[in-house]
Amino acid sequence: MGAAGSVVVSSAFESASREDLLAVIGLLQRQVEAAEARAEAAEAQAGELAAANERLTVRVVELERRLGRNSSNSSMPPSTDIFGRPEKKTAPKSGRKRGRQPGAGGSGLSMVADPDAVEEHLPMVSLLVV
Image (cartoon, rainbow, N blue to C red; front, side):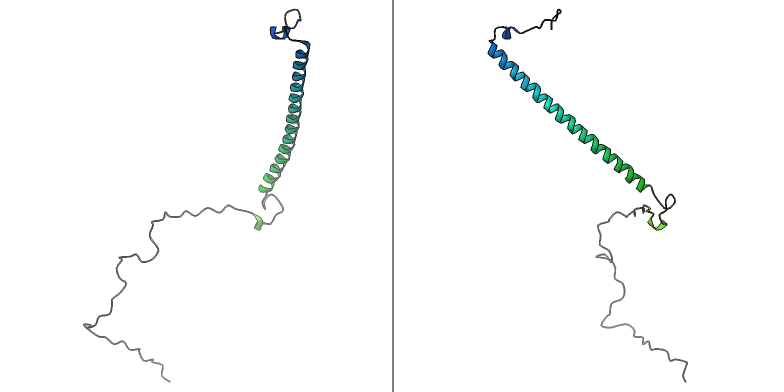
C-alpha cells in the first residue's frame, strides 16, 4: 500500500486482462485455503501432542511416586524394599584357562622300573582286642 492507501501494483498486472486477473485471484484464494487447512491441521496436531504430553507427565509423576516408596514411608513390608546390589568388580581376564597350566611342573613322583628302596606300609593292629 502506498502513502494514501492506494495499492501498488506491478506493471505486469496493469496490462493483464480481466480473465487473467480472475485466474490469479482464484489461484491465490486456493493457496490461502490450503495454507489455512495446513494451519488447522497443525493446530489439531499441537492439541493432540499437548494432551499426550499431559498424560505422559502424569504417568511419570505416578511412576516416580511409586519408585520413591519403601517400607519406611508407606505400608509396604520391608521384604518389598529394593536395594541396589553393588556390582562385582571382576578381575581383568588374563587369557589363560583355569587350572594347571601347560608346562607347569608335575605334582608328584612318577613310578620307576628299578626303585632305590622299597618300604612296606602295613596297617597298625588295633589295640582294642576283645
